[in-house]
Image 1 (cartoon, rainbow, N blue to C red):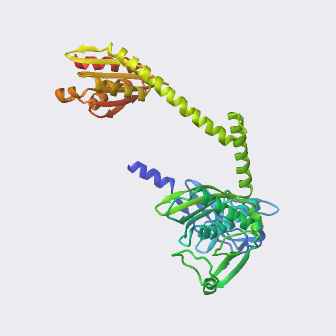
Image 2 (image 1 turned 45 degrees about the horizontal axis):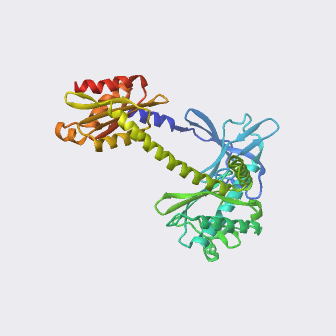
Image 3 (image 1 turned 135 degrees about the horizontal axis):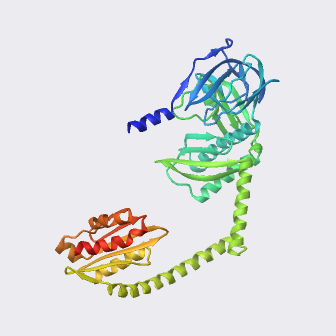
Length: 436
């Protein structure tokens, strides 16, 4: 346990060096709402080691990079000049500082750089963030005002939204939510953005605020028609840029909390294409232009075949039952059957339970092997349990050692699994030896 704790500490060990100041700059201005590129200087930096990997935290005098916050992941991109190009792999916020994370430190740290945000990464995140606002608005409209946001994730690939609701969403509810969100997208609603307004004014506007969240005196409000929320994230200039919205999953994450995951834009197009390919494959496999009816027909055919198979198995089991009773040996006054059979675990169980009802004074060990996996079942009739105090669960543990396995169960029936098929004969013979 102590070794595990030490490994865990080592795996999560973070060592942050002291900040190296290049020049004093009290305010790091964020200009990324309107610009994805600007000229910057590095004000300070530090080296950070995480799991023996060195990273560098860079702070600029101003930045177009959006730091992780409000559920939205941080921007990526690069800073460059005529002599070097440094990749920014993430952007975080710490003590009101926007920190740009890089795997290398610029050679000429004091030079001027052009900071460029990865536009595809940012625009995809913005689409998903705006779609999250539309989803929140539609959920309250469709399900009721009891819906409250309990968490979110906005990334370039997808969005995730956690909210309060008392039951699983029906397929009709999910389709209606999708339809209404897509309706707002197709209306091409323009973004209305209110920066640095008093929080009292935001409340008067009816802006959505997260319960328990602490807000500054001056806030930013994002508005798409009737959707109003306090938000510091990045957004599309109009809903048409979202392109399309699709819910890919809905489920419970805890009591009274549901989670929706959804996609937009290019991810939606890719998802739609994959679904079309899947549908075409199904049509081809079932050779029916109507895949739904084709699948229904297959299900019905499968049910019919399953019934026929069960009847066949029942007949075979009756024949096998007669045959296996011929293998019965009397050892020290006790009937013993110890045989390898060509049955699956359910067949072995059915055979054992049938003989338990019809026979007395019988101990039966069955063994079966498939793909180098061994199954043992042991049945003891009730009279032997009562009169001889026998216990199948105890016996099976001893027998299973021969197949390098383990097992357990009840006094009248127990099972074991193992990996050594060469031990089957040993376990079958061992049962006989126990009673000799």
